[in-house]
Image (cartoon, rainbow, N blue to C red; front, side, top):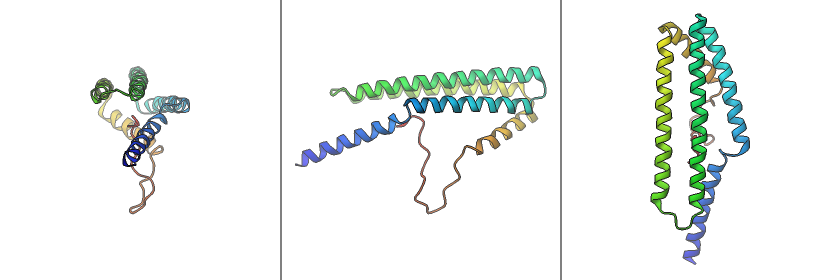
Amino acid sequence: MKMWKLLMLSLLATTLTLAGCARHHGMMGSEHRDAALERGTTEMKGLVEQTVKDPEKAKQVQAILQDIVAEVKKSGQQTRAYHEQLYALNATYDAKPEQFTKILDDLNNSRMQTGTKILGMRYKMKGLLTAQEWKDLTEAMDKTRTRYMHPPKAEGSMQGGPAPSSSGY
C-alpha cells in the first residue's frame, strides 16, 4: 500500500512537470511568440526612427536589431529541440540522471552562447549611437516595456506569484 502511494505521487509529479513544460510549446504558444516578436520589432523600429536622427546610423541600428531578432528566433528553436529531447528521454524507463543532466547542460550552454552574441550586438549598436541617443532610446524602450509588465502585487496578497520561467522548468 505504501509503495502504491509513492508510485502515484511520483506519477503525479512527473505529469505535472510535463504539463507545465508543454504549455510553452504548443502551436498557440508559438503563434503568440511570433506575433509578440513581430510587434516588438515594429515598435523598436519606430523607437529607433524617433531617437536616431542620422538616417544611415538608424539603418545600421535597424540591421543590428534584425540580427538580434534572428538570434532570438534561433534560440527559441534550439530550446524547443532540447525540450523535445527531454520529453523523449522522460519516456525512456531506463533513462539515467546523467542523460538528463547532459541535455540540461547543453541547453544552458546554448542559452549562454545566445546571450553572449546578443550582448556583443548590443555593444555594437551602442557604439553607433551618441550617449544622448542611447539614453533616449533606452528610456523609450523602458516606457514601452512597462505597458507589457504586470503591476506589482499588493503586499500580503496571495494572488500572482513569480513570473514563469521561459524554459518552463
